[in-house]
Structures are given as structure tokens and as C-alpha cells.
Image (cartoon, rainbow, N blue to C red):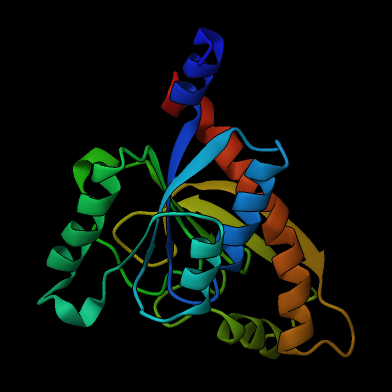
Length: 205
């Protein structure tokens, strides 16, 4: 291997992606990497649930996968330790939550190194139990005319932490939770890679 290529591979941001379902966010990040739009590599995909579509998608991409179920651990701290053990083993520099549904206890060595994406404009419509279609239903029930997505650094709470990127879109007449979710997910597909790129320099320098 040429020295220049070797240095480039070492500098490429190493990602761990955490999923709980279909893995569409993981797949989108992988596509951006494959298309040369994001200078990163996915070192591991960890699922909180077995036999989800996201695991199969990750395996088809040739990615290392692990399942860490919440019910297998006595508390959130033990559960989180098992996850970050896998993250450290592959020397991931940034953890990306993509449809991850369990609260994490983020260890000190990963403070400021865990990103989450939420399908609303935080701080609105966040918190425990607010995920997926529930968020879009709440936006519609509140009569909002604008919604969007937020990528933020995760902390020890649900949907808090410093915001990195937000994207917005209109709520249109006749929208359902499903049509709104599709419009917001299109925003997520651009916002998450943008957020990863935004924090890359500080983590790889």
C-alpha cells in the first residue's frame, strides 16, 4: 500500500452506528461514504434488538455487527458499558445513533463524541417516548406549519445536548404522520452526513 493511501485510511473518521430497527440512517451514511461525499468508515454496527432489518442491511454491506439487548443487563450503566466495550474494540472515534431507542449512559471518554438525530426541531417534540411516528403525530396535533430534523450531541438525557445541524420543511395541508415522516427523513439524509463532516476535523486532527 502506498504511504499516502495508508495515511488517508488512518485519518478517515471511524464510526460506530447504533440502531434499533430498519437501519435506514446507517444505510444512508454508508451510501454517502461509498459515493465519496463523507470521509469516514463504519467500523461497527450495534443493534439493541436481534433480527431487525438494519442488521441484515449492515451485513450485506460487509460491516461488523453486534447485538446488545437492554433486557440482558441489570441497569442502563451495565447495558451502556457493554455497548462502549464494542465501540472501543474497533477504535471508533464517533458514535452515531440512528433510530436508537434506548437511553445511553455516555462514559467520560465519549463525552462530545456521540451524535443523535431527532425528527423534529428540538427542543420541541423531544423527550422520553418521543420517537418515530409519535413525533410527527404530535407535530400535526399541535398545528405546526414548520417541522424538520435536528442532529445534536447526545448527553445523559433524551434529546438534549448541543445542536450541530437543523433542517426545516413545511407542514402541508393534508399531511399525515406518514407523509410528514417521509419529508423529514429526506432532510435527515442530508443533515446527518453534514453533521458528521462538521465534527470530523476535530476528531481526526
